[in-house]
Each structure stands twice: as C-alpha cells, then as structure tokens.
Image 1 (cartoon, rainbow, N blue to C red):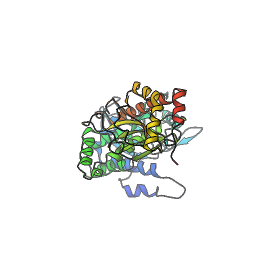
Image 2 (image 1 turned 90 degrees about the vertical axis):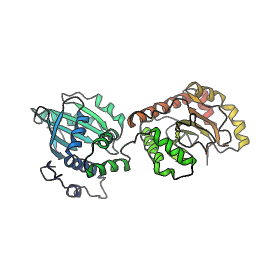
Image 3 (image 1 turned 180 degrees about the horizontal axis):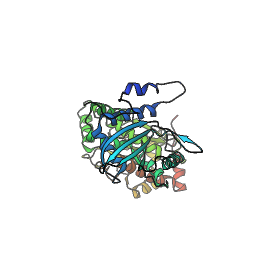
Image 4 (image 1 turned 30 degrees about the vertical axis):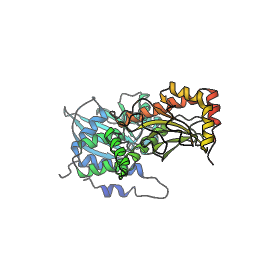
Length: 378
C-alpha cells in the first residue's frame, strides 16, 4: 500500500529522517531514533495508527483517520522553549481536527517540569484545535507523573509495553512488525509471562532440550529490570542488581546475602515448585559461603525470620532445599503468579511482593541484625 500520510510535510522516508540523528560521540540519539521510527510506522500503517491513537486518548474521542505526522516541533512562550517528540493531526469521527502530542522516553525518566511547560505551550498554540498530550515511557509507574498536572489539555500516560500489545494485535504492515520486534529486542517493553511459556520452558528443561528458544529467562530479566527501577532504596536494596543464574532471575542485594527473585528451575536450589503445574515461583533466599555443617547450625538462628516470612505468605520450612549448603533460608511465595494479566500488571504485582518481603525483613531491628550476621561472599 502506498503511503498517503506525510511526515513533516514530506513523503515518509525512514533513512532520510534518521540521518540527522546518526550516532556522534557527544550525543545519545536513541530517543530521536525511536521517535522517527515510530513516526514512520504511524505513517505507513494507518490502520494500526488509529488503534494506537485511540489507546492514547481513551474514551475522549473516536479516531476517523490520521491526517499528518510531525516530529520535533518547536514550542515556546515568553520564557522558554521545547521540542515535544511528535505531533499527530487527527480527524475524529465528527470530522473535527484534533492534535495528539507525544513525549516519548527511552532510558530517561519522566520530567514533571517538562510536561508542565509543554502543557503551557500547547494552551497558547492554535487555541481552537483540541489537543491531548501523551507521555510514552518504558515504565508503567510513570503514570503517577501525569496525575499531578493541572491543565485544560488532557495528559495521559502509556507504557511501551501497552503500546506493544496494541501493535501486536493490529499490525498490518511489515514495518510495524519490525518495530514490534525492535521494541522487544531493546527491552523497551516487558513481555507478559504466560503460563504456557513457563510450562513449555520447564518441559524442555526436564527433557534436556534447548529451553533457550522459549526466551523465558530474557523476558523475566526485563521484568525484573523494570521492578528494580521502582524498588525503594534502603539499607537492603542500595546495592541491588539483577542476576540471571541458578534457575532464577531476580535481584541480589545486601552484600549478596539476599535474593528476591522468580524461580523457573528449582534444581540448583535443591527445591521444588509449590505447584509443578504452574512452574514459576517467587522466592526469597538468604545465602552465604557456608559448608553444609556450618549451614545446618546457622539455620537454627533464623527461626524468627522464618516465622516472620511465613506470616507474610512464604513457605520457608519445607526442608526440601537444605541440601544446598549455601542456602541459609529459602521461601517460596504461596500466592500464584498472575499469568492472566497484562505485562504492566505483572510488573506491579512482583514489585508489591518484593516490597512486602523487604518490609518484613527490615521492619524489625532484631531481624535486621540477623541479616547482617549472614556471611558475605568474597
């Protein structure tokens, strides 16, 4: 299908548009690359563009068609200026012209002051045309930035993960399918973890087949990276980093004493899933460089923490994991992983579970003292 939607008043040409943002030593051009690529997809795939715009604006209006796309449009007032990433000119179902402006982020965090300035600029531009500003970021939690805005112009947030879901459902052009794959490869989106994928991963593990093709570990890593960004900083978490090893993907923290993670293979931990038909468990683990004799003696001291975590929903004292000498404590969260919700909701659920575990461990001075007594590696 020939393109009929112009970008900056010209026939879409992705290579020309990207040229001005070619890599240079003094500039990270990823967000500009993302903007131009997204603009190209919207122009080349008008059907998916309508679905994306309607997802942006919710129930505010129905979209008849996309009329034009502009990138890096300069806006200003008497005091300052700025360059929102995208302007979309849209006809609604009543043939009224509307503008949907987009500020997208790659690694940068949402900036409330920037959004406030943009809303102020937009209020002064072409006042007769209804406008909507969208913040598009990797992190679902950035939605909270939009709640504080006060303007006659609506401001909404969407995560790249949610946009990816729309694109995956409605794409009709080869460029859109490539963009969909690109978002995943660059970890801009969190792929929802499905029960079917975890079962297939575990089946291949037990059959000694190539389980890497399921990409479950990569998707869990992206999920945990997103959770790490939102994890409150504390004495326990200030050194937290994502690890992918020993059948788990999660966060190692507190001098490598604590892991909060998602276990997809219990073998290395000498454990078992709480429910083998749902082979993905949230775990909390305390570990150190112990011999088996040392570990058996050490574990008796941690009865108070075991009791606290048991009350918080963890099965900690089954005895199945004690053959692993390094494990001082291992708890499996009893509540089932929510396979039937969106990726953003899965991230939020994991974050809530991890935060609750941290609150349990650090909310009591005696428990914190116990944690500090665990031997450290190195």
